[in-house]
Image 1 (cartoon, chains in turn brown, cyan):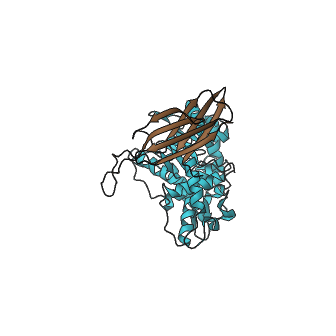
Image 2: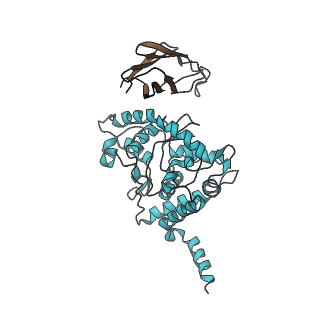
Image 3: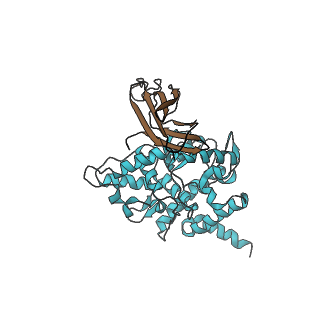
Length: 104
Length: 276
């Protein structure tokens, strides 16, 4: 369990309903530290990618408006059992995380 | 004579309330009130808070529960729970059954300490006994640890036994008085909202029933975007009636939790929960 993304995928009539919960601070960059009054630097996810069997099927560009520990759900069509779904993100500091799930 | 007797009885009850406290009949009356008020709602559904009374919100909540936001907290709590203290001992050494599946026994009245011990209070007592700094009570690591412990106890019915210690009954009575006392600039008691006006609109939201209030804590509240303990919620409730909140895990709030939990005695624990 190294990944900070929790994923669940349900297959129904060739469409996979993918749900993820990503652990991330999602700092907007406009919040101040209550003690020092200094701005807390922005730290948020900028790109989310979904790969279906290694082929990119979705890219999402995120900004500071997305909540802390975001929940994200989407559908992938033409999916069948045994296919792999990989979800990954990159944040503005270059950190990255990914998770892979095999459809049942 | 017949008419005078109840009055005398009521007066004597006022002056010697501690002696006459009968928690079990209080609880039965509490449950009966809601049964009569909402005859269509099954008793066990009250553990779902406002979702027992609000159909559209219930459906949204079911979707949230498919992938609950408190999962991360359970995971974090499990890690914290299993991380040993500096002296090599751990939380498991402080609790019966290694701390697993025991949420339903809290809060209880500790006869040695002479006070009500809630789960979060016990977690910090454990830390202090092992030379660690106590955690902050309202949110953060303590909510995660409590969430993990609640998760391991899901489905077990609350098994509170007040015993016959007069101090336990006094604590219960204090909690009960807190619950029914008006406070704050708005002059509301807990009971005003959660008994009298349960199910009614308060601005855009509905008020939940007092029954089942203590079963699902700690809770992930969408409003907080975060986990919080029952005492964080008390804090918020008191602020909303414009009263000065009391310290979390202070005697008043612990006694209140004691009373409130007893009202849900016998209901299943279903913490951690997700609420609006």
